[in-house]
Image 1 (cartoon, rainbow, N blue to C red):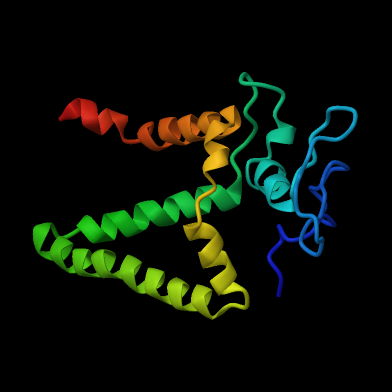
Image 2 (cartoon, rainbow, N blue to C red):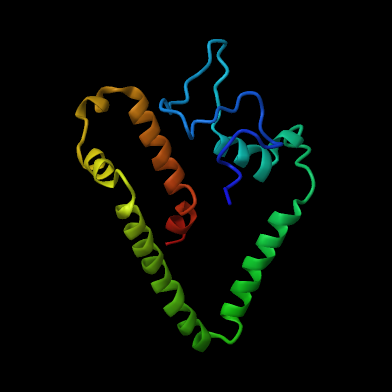
Length: 160
C-alpha cells in the first residue's frame, strides 16, 4: 500500500508535477519558462484535499467536500463526548491526551533512528552551516515561519 502523494500518476496531478521520490537530484527548481515544478505532495494537498482548482475565486468557494465534513463532524463528536459529563470525565481524557503525544513521538524517534542513513541525517542536522545566514532567502523563510507560528495563537495572547 502506498500513500497517494508519492507519485505524479494520479488524476489530480498536472503537467508541472515532478516525481522526486526515486530521483538522485531531489531539488525542485523553477523551470526555464518561470513555471515552478511541484512535488506530488504539494499537488495532492492543493488539488485533492483543498480542490482549489475547482474554485474560480473568493466569491465561489465550491461545495462541501464530504470527506472533510465527515472529519470535522468526527472531531466535534470526540470533543462532545470528552466534555459530556463535565470535569470528572475531563480528567480521564487528559490522561490520554497528555501521554499519547509522548508515546507517538517515542515510536517515531525509535523508527527514525533505526532507518538506514539516520546517523548521516543527525550529523547533518547538528552541523550548522553559518554561511547560510548570509542569504536573504533564509531570513525570509524564518520570518514566514515566525508569522505562521504566531498567527493561530495570537488571539489567545491578546485575551491574556
